[in-house]
Length: 132
Image (tube, rainbow, N blue to C red):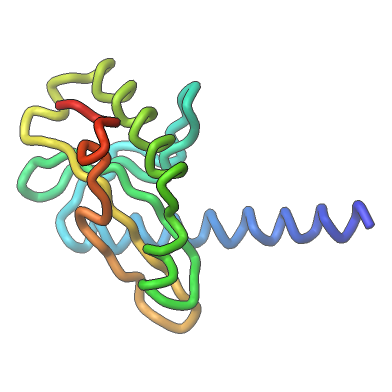
């Protein structure tokens, strides 16, 4: 049984890496500058960090799902808060990067479809988690 779980975990890891690569390519095509991939902190991991063409610092969660809507729904409040705390720590260490503001996005990657970018997918400041 352990072998089957290990294989499933490896497949999920590979799917995640491919999804993040596709999301990075989409964002670069749109004029974003990717600053980091799989950025880890004591609060957790941020899939992608990028600067938008207008200079906004974007923290991006990448989800491999059947549709964009299910990808958005899969980022629950607990995960939003975790990403928000990691983003706050990242910005505290690099305040100049957030001069034009910050944003939380989702990129949905579905088999057989182009990735979909959802800018401003959530706003942690609405529940007091992020201050900038």
